[in-house]
Image (cartoon, rainbow, N blue to C red; front, side, top):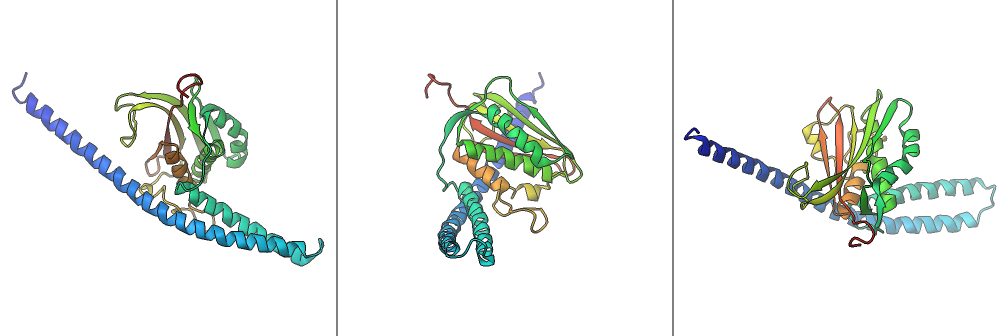
Length: 272
């Protein structure tokens, strides 16, 4: 063996340790930034919700005083619909900031994907092909059912929008035994059994500076008026509230894959 082999091994270990430390520091900085944004968003959302409640209540009272065939009544209905859309946006902000109450249940991620598949195929249109590759065994997680379905929908819609000329969206699920630090488990998560949801596309991809802000609320690269910038932010809020992690892998011109890691839930009679 070469007398320099130990030195080379030590140098490699130091380099890997330095890279790992850099990745951890970057993840921590991102988490702190998102936490700060979440606190600001929660304050705004709560105040805005209170104002919307007043608008909706007064709109209801005014509507009830008007004849059914009144043009003013139809105008009031438009006010109510606009206020309800605004209320939905504040709901998404509260999900991102983890201020929205969740009702977790133990459920099978594969079943969530299957149940959403028909809606997804209608949503993405004929120019986009949807492929599902689900784990042969159940993928049990503890999450709010409606919010988890919204995560899948948001990821697929985001993938569709990245392919204006059409392409393929692929949904994959897997069980990952990450008892050791391997299998791609994010360094922010403790080792253990996880369920992995991946949604990939072969669209335009993201530049690194775009990817760094992708989970922030109201950040969007879509043309003005075509997106709220809350799709991925809602995904991030839901996943972190479920003690999971979300990460993005993307190459400009080479497509994007969003990976969602959720702790695997125990089967009935095994610690639940």
